[in-house]
Image: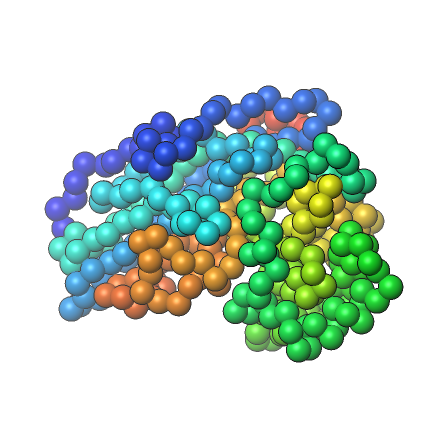
Length: 346
């Protein structure tokens, strides 16, 4: 494969491609816990199988939306192949898109991504206010509809009605559902079926990881008429300031008129029972968000099914999912911020 010169894109160039602007991370108020860090990841792409013709690759980039809780800057992509930065229309998820023919991908190659992120604690008042946003950034109707693995009828609807009995306000319904999920679910990786974010599986098996906890919460909330949505990214450890990241993490938000989007993290609350109240209405700084939503249709569209969720690169070879990619992720806290990290957002 004739390798082209390494292509480096700074965030200003990316902004021109997708029509949005970026600013350097704003300094957080001393009253708001924050965490600033560099994130690096490498996608190892193997040689295409013999007889293949085309590789298409979508590499998720951390979410850059309209809220003030996550700021991404200094984005740099090193690739031997041309790419473009795009975003899908429904949720606003961003990614780098790469197309390679058989000659270009005849040998293994790597794509490296680095960026700087600042994450603020997202904590909201649970008291309705006239100053709260009159309408959410995304239409709430979308977050009352089912997803493929997040149904809102049948068993889920019945369970939701039972668990929210007596509650008339969205906030009270959401709290009852949150309490139920924490009380009945168990966080583990035992057996098969966990990790897909299948609300029916979670309802019946009563165990799983963060995707299962939050899919059950979202399904029950939507069935109760409370808009709820899924977010996923990477966790940052509390007990170190640099190192590898070997897993993903997800959480959820629900919408209340007069308050806005309210974050919850039921799986972290299960692990840290002393923080059950904290994680209803707040999420800490120890994460970076990559994408929003489920059943994601990329642009250009993938040939396969909509993505269940989008936190790791997705690839297709000749229109079929290609699962042989390997990914490495690491982070490094800013030196000035490292001394405060352990207490941030707790």
